[in-house]
Length: 607
Image 1 (cartoon, rainbow, N blue to C red):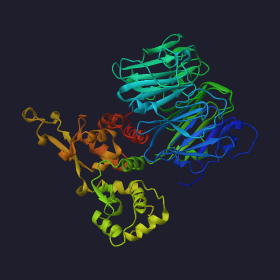
Image 2: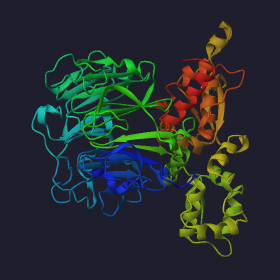
Image 3: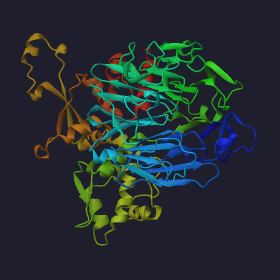
């Protein structure tokens, strides 16, 4: 992949002329290439209301672009890894894997939780939001609406802060910059808002409900009326478990269910229906499409289908549409720039982002395997050996190190730390390459490769993905086993009676490398956290009641990032049993996993 720009923008030129390549005075009615280079490292873009946006690239680094001012760069502490970034108007908030929240906004007006609009924003530095640490709360996710922010914390606790105009916080009292609890009897599991939304939605587990609160003057809460709701209210015609995402503009809301169906409610100019609706109604133009991404601005919506088809609708007062229309009441298919058409069938997923005035289109080239291993490297959890000199050893995962170098730990230790040992800085540079293919110091890494008698630079064929895929075939080095209960349906009555859940012979075993489970599955990480190290167990039971056939497919996917079936395997069984794998096993690469399942569906006509 070349380093040419893959970031495109549409909207008023006067707002973002500082990043476009075409120097014309008119607006940008078509997708226009950005001058920002090397955008294949972009993980997410958050765009506010006025002339600026924040780009998340590396695990703890951000870049801020504002008019013609010099690009700002921010770096969180080295022990912090970014999990998500969100925006609303003049404010950005950052969530890290440690459950901490950070804010970026006007250095003078806004203190710990900057939420209200300001005439100017200096964006001098990222400031930690200390409230949650002081309360010993772990923030799992956050969303922002219009001058408001919502935080989902451990235990399903929900907090909100900012303006409570029209009851948009659901706290039943005046708003505050300090987060305040939203009192809900049930455990909250997901939260939703929109960059310009004066309301928000959330899902509870028991009962299985979708709740809403806030501005409802156009019926955008989908509750069958236009009455304002200052406290959480149930949206009656949807179960929470059915919903993929919800997002709101100022006058409308859009809901996507897990089947990819798109529903709208609110003002008919913006809800995709062309008619005023106070309940969520299926949008006819998208009835046959499966939508996987949703973005709303102040008064327009973008959706992307599983076939990478882009649709847009709403009012175009800011010349956001890459068409000749001033507005479209119903979804209109938008042609993608030629650059993107090369990737329509690839695993590199097209991404969309939207601010109040502009929309972005970019390619997400992230390597989820690499990111998973980066997190494993930074956590240093469950390492099983060390390399380095006495008093300066660094813990590592043996299987990964030996897989990448084709050398044993003893050989590496002798070559690198024998007569003339390398220093800790060189060791860390070497580990970054081993875990996630990062070459932070070309010269240092070349010296280490020479000591190990490896060719440098690493050849194209010697990639992390290929090494891990080859490791799947190495059964001798697998150090862990997943136990899968034998299906009683396959046994006769006498054999089934003999089954004893406590007997290990009643389980089949799937061999695996422990570090793969740790790196790629949040569920297994949590399970290992509770395992007493004194037990020194090298086995764990899977409780999903999935077939061993499906679990073997899943484990292979963790190594190879692909799903391939043999002629003996039942494709319908695999698709049915793995449809909830992303959520249950807490996999990071939802897009790629679902893309692989969709290929199987298409291949065997299972839709």
